[in-house]
Length: 85
Image (cartoon, rainbow, N blue to C red):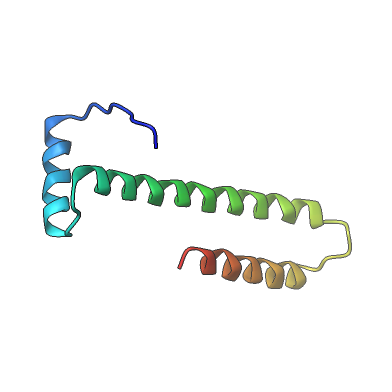
């Protein structure tokens, strides 16, 4: 594990302390790690959605109907959602 230094405004730190206490995190570090993991997963999902959107453009003109695209899109969303459960 690597050590990083993080500077936060007093108000934000107070909010983190409140959340840490209310939701049973053992420390600020645990809360911040958890928040960062959540944010990383959010960006991974956004990347997947961007790739999915680009794939629609790539599918045009290759014989895919809008209905076939929608079926593929729904399946992809289900697979992505399953990864985040």
